[in-house]
Length: 507
Image (cartoon, rainbow, N blue to C red):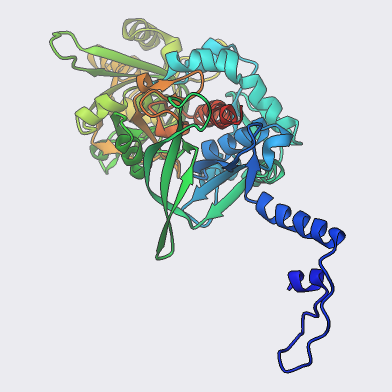
């Protein structure tokens, strides 16, 4: 139609009308026609300095979770303005929404970071796996302080709680979701929901420059939307599928080894001890401010067992034990607990500040000489601040389990039972019968082997152009914001690495 107009021919011309005289194609009309044609041809392609045309450079981000969205933003932000029109960063998310884990983290408040004023070694202590590999990344590539500044510079006000957990002052995960989503839109990231990536294959494209030996990475990505499956080509892929098996399958198909994933951050069930007649029966909700938990496990070819120790608050539940001390123990002993099918013994010291069992026995035995109070009424031993280390209900249950009657007074307590009470305080055995899930959060230990990843860029050593970040790799942290910090740091570095990868093809 526009050709007819440029030629001076009415667009509504019909053959049965008398044909009007068509004017000649003037120089002006010819130049306008040229400009229109150039404009059409320019849209999907760009011209290099060599004068030939190439398609847009494209980055696919597989997974719209915390690490995926963060890596996409980092990639888009790293592309210079003059080259943005020639690149695309696309997030593919199979579900109807992105950042689902962010929405449920911290009971809906989003534990976005851990205390960034702590030293890097202190923060790295929260990673049972990946501590060594994250050292350089968190010191030089994207530090905890930079992560905090990323959010605060975008209007998110943060607060730090006494246990080191950091939350938005709104106490709403929606604040973090909105911040990340808005940043993605501002950066020009395309977000495709209900788009499930089925497979990734790697091919190579020979660069058209003078050096024919130069190969640019290319990926064919198979995408399913509803019942339709299509294939698209990308220059770089960021794999950010979390602990989903499909992500590990894709990484494996591209040459990677997978450390078998096992659950981490779980509570411990003690079915026999919480049922009626058990020492923990009726104590659900009782918490101890500071306890020590110990788990011993066998080491192949060694006679002596190895011990895992953790300290912190401990909570008794309807099913067994939970709280930070238990969760940290489960994270650091994830594979060892898996090996025994979560059935073993965990030693609990309910009041480590009171000393060893012998020291506690001596302190309790002195009471038999001077005290006329009943043993089960309350824990008579106090901390330096004058508080009781053991809640009244737990104390009463420990006393009863030691064979001391409810009405018996200290002056009447047998030495054998007092010694048993001291052991119950310092070396109480929780007989685990299984594991539970910590709230709605689910973390795994395992994933893509870290030795197969360049941690300076998060690029695969097996497949150039492939970048990996977040929980898809063999890094996991304890509760308290550490797993999100892994997502922000590895995501940021992966995004920048992918951008650098495609930008190199512009030269």
